[in-house]
Amino acid sequence: MKTLCACFVMVTTTFLFASVSHAQHPNVLLIVSEDNGPELGCYGDPYARTPHLDRLGSEGIRFNRAFVPQSGCSQSRASFLTGLYPHQHGQIGLATWGFELYREKTANLPRILKAAGYRTGLIGKLHINPASAFPFDMHEITGANFQRKNLGDYADSAGSFINADDAPFFLSVNYPDPHDPWIRQVDGLPMNPLSKSDVQVMSYMGIDSPEFRDMVADYYNCISRLDSLIGNLLQVLDESGKADDTIVIYIGDHGADMLRGKRTCYEGGLGIPMLIRWPGKIVPQVRDDLVTTLDLMPTLILATGAQPIEGLPGSALQPLFRSGSVSWRTHCFAEYHTHAAAPNYFPQRSVRGDRYKLIESLLPDTIHPDYDKTIEKLHGDYNGQNYGGTLDLHAVIDAAPPNVKAAYALMRSPPRYQLYDLQVDPFEMTNLAEHPEYVEIRDDLSGRLSQWRRETNDPLLDPRNLSKLTNEVRSVKSKSASKKHAWEYPKYLLKQEAQGDR
Image (cartoon, rainbow, N blue to C red; front, side, top):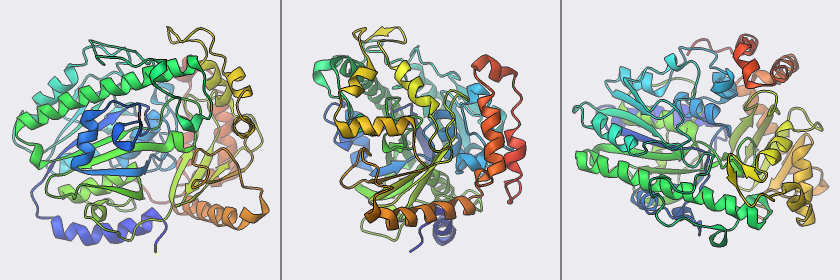
């Protein structure tokens, strides 16, 4: 059995492409939400009110173990649109801080589907540099819209685009919810907001307090509003008469912006919801296979008959569209670089199999700068919203059980390796990397991680590149400084690539 994505996709895509190359071109509706993991009703979350997404999941495939390659907005979005890991495409940090693709001509979904005769549209933010690399025919609501203005415009703009003509379309709709600020109610949505007495803090954080539950309640209120807006969008698709000919994909761009979530290699940051509906082509089901958003590009290339792209690390998902077990990947890989330059820089790599997961820190035994930044960010009066005014996360963590306190201490200053048994420790609280009885498992995963890094041309395998990147990113300490800084990393990291322009 092949364990690495690149090996699998070369065989699978070639075989399946031949069987569908003359099929009718399906439309594609890609729906993306901001900063949420699988906190949906269809994933068993008891606090989520998501009837529209639950229905979408029941009509298609719900992937229980779906992941992003890096838990950051720009990084993740660049990855599902190019089919590449961040270390391969270059968008290793936020676009708002000037991070960018190595090459403007990098192959991406709007470009290749446009070449295949598709109309291409984007609603909501792109958040990748340079924007010119993504030649959408239409782009509406171009900003992030974190203040949630005119939310009805998302469905209205989608309807105009979908109904413009009968040519096949690729439309990506990107919503601001549930990114912070977690606004409790907008335009009457949700109708009956949750409060702190209605929810519990997500288990992967390992901590709890009434003030924190107040914050989490508003996160769930954002999820509920998101669901209502997606319901409106799906109604527009139904009314167009094109739903039966449309692949609908819903994903989150990464996990919630909470402790041990966004900007980490923990499951709370990398794990996302992924729902896919394709009437007549997908057997409705729930699957536990390890999948990643890197699989979307080869899947859509195959489904639409677009020109295949060689060397993509993801795998076409079509073998999973039918019921029953199939030969599939055994391990899934991810990474982290930075988010907003110096305040968040802490490069890591990770691999997980069915049971065990390994995280490798490339700067071990140093203070992770994002730890204190996140604690500071989630304190008391947050983004103009007062969550009791007394939310002291240091005190909450100090009052947690010993294993949770130890996990937070390790998060602040990680060793080179963290090893977790996800079967007995799904929230990654107990590091087993130095336990003698787990050395063989650690070494096996570390070998797989090294092999993956070599096969995907990870430029940070070269210690000189790691040193250069560390010095450059740490030199940029503010957003104003980033606007003046001319990033050099695309030049020296790009030299590591041996595959030429894509």
